[in-house]
Image 1 (tube, rainbow, N blue to C red):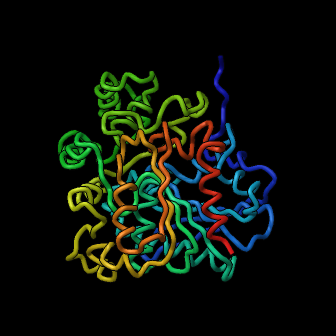
Image 2 (spheres, one colour):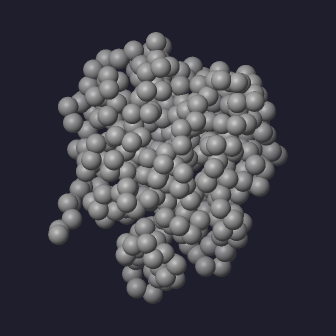
Length: 364
């Protein structure tokens, strides 16, 4: 059966809404943008924050009910997505730079919120985040670089990143091996279609035998990049159309981000990459050091088959429950992994309703 062809970076998945793009710049010189999907004015605005190495595309997929349309139908008529420096819609992940999550927390999220506020004023803002978008936004919230957030939803991970043992080994040895020995300095799920005998093509061929769950090279590479040796989602939850367009939904990853993640995994919590770096003097060395002062309620989501960040959000919820009892919530999703809570075929019946219920209870 021929696969449905969906254009890359399409906005066709959002129906019955006005779409507009709102560029903004960070203090360290990157051009980013927000996309607004407005069906109706609403007192409660929702901002969707993608992970590494996805983009806003994960929230607007045409092949099934997506997060933006679901929010619109639930009464949240003004929904925004942000594409920031880790988005696959930008070239920044494949450039010779060494950005880290401190830069995202200090520059990207505050700039995005400032541009958002320029259009919506003082209306309530709910933020729904995923993967390193969740880590970095939680870092910004707990560092105080973003304020005035009515509610935050974090999928898979937040301020206590934990990974399988094999992932921890790769986080330690992978960046120097890629940068100084194997090359190139970034990983890309599209290496399977690279020219024959190039380094990317050879890496994809070397990875493939260890990932027998499917025949899609991009899925194998994503499992190698993020999955701890196992897929980043439960295959039964993923549409064949989605599975076939993984190279369009995921992009390159600069390996320096792995260094920061490893430092957090080893520390057991979100910490600054280099406390001596004067560029980030405004940020705390330990992002949980002022946890008791944060009053924004957080919904921690995690699949019980999360092979990327395992029980990170269970641990984070437990830790924050001690600091601010009763403020935050935890939802464990049976049969789900890391990515499928947002891109899964049945997410609109099995996941999204839990998120919307949380938003509605925190609205007004």
